[in-house]
Length: 367
Ligand SMILES: *[C@@H]1O[C@H](CO)[C@@H](O)[C@H](O)[C@H]1NC(C)=O
Ligand SMILES: *[C@@H]1O[C@H](CO)[C@@H](O)[C@H](O)[C@H]1NC(C)=O
Ligand SMILES: *[C@@H]1O[C@H](CO)[C@@H](O)[C@H](O)[C@H]1NC(C)=O
Ligand SMILES: *[C@@H]1O[C@H](CO)[C@@H](O)[C@H](O)[C@H]1NC(C)=O
Ligand SMILES: *[C@@H]1O[C@H](CO)[C@@H](O)[C@H](O)[C@H]1NC(C)=O
Image 1: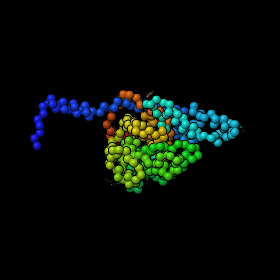
Image 2: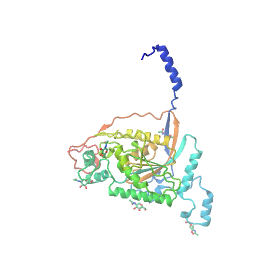
Image 3: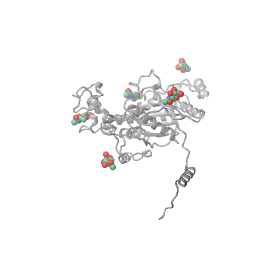
Image 4: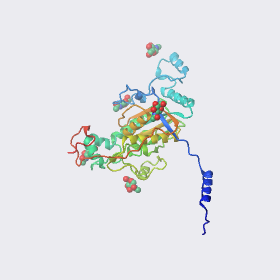
């Protein structure tokens, strides 16, 4: 076929016509700033000690307080007719729900308030192995292997202790929903690592939810995974396997068949982990309007999410969860500039170090 000859000038005219016809204005650059609403949960109070904090013994840490939106009639009824604060006609969680609702109906259009529930998985075989072997032998030798011949900790599954932890959190959610009248999560996100997929299932599957609550159909999100290290417990399984094991779960768009990130003997820097924690939070906050959001993830990843949200450090034991009332503000322009750092090489030892205390995280104790 004979192609018509066109001059450069005519070509430019055609392309500028095409761009005039097809050009879409690029959306203005925005970024999201997160802050924590204080005085809602004990975990945000600097005087609360994280170590040994039992969130199921203290109503998830919800502070007993009045909110500006409390219905004064309720208090009058309570004091006049009934001296028992437990039988107030609205629970602390219901009054918090009214408060969050009013914050969202009164704030500017670029602001929103969301209650995040960040849950750590129950004990996995990698946690048990580190306890059994000691941190130096674990970090510098065993964690780079798939297991020890007896147990496997690559993409670790939950130990029986971990399963029991998740089931006790399930019972706690049932109590929160049916006795405390708390609003359950409207959306659920989960790390792609098996211990989180399983913890989310044991925690939320089969809960009797209030009428109108969205069902438990979590979305698997790559960037909620644990800090990527040389440890095989941070390497995820393929998508086909995850789908076979958890057929009701959804995958976020673009979720790859094979783990795109884990690389033998290399580790993500914590600055990079915070960058991708911010990326995944921005993704959630720009695509999901829920007021109550659950994330099932890891100790290191939840610590990173808390840094991005501006929450104080609050370490979670296996199976524990933390609620955070977040104010998200969408602002014009780019956020503070950050640069991606390359993964760093992780030093290992040719034989397991014999010292047991955790003074040897850099594997300087190779013998
Ligand atoms: C978010 O906003 C607060 C309050 O204006 C400010 O102090 C903080 O530095 C901001 N954080 C980021 C990451 O921009
Ligand atoms: C936490 O508190 C609950 C309820 O009081 C109790 O059943 C549970 O044993 C406690 N857990 C721990 C680890 O102390
Ligand atoms: C009501 O509660 C208050 C404070 O706990 C207590 O001092 C008072 O004796 C109670 N009154 C009755 C009638 O139970
Ligand atoms: C492997 O580690 C587990 C603890 O995680 C331990 O119970 C088991 O005995 C170990 N097996 C071998 C062969 O060392
Ligand atoms: C996916 O993972 C499973 C379980 O590890 C394995 O048996 C299967 O061969 C893998 N499939 C692909 C395509 O990698």
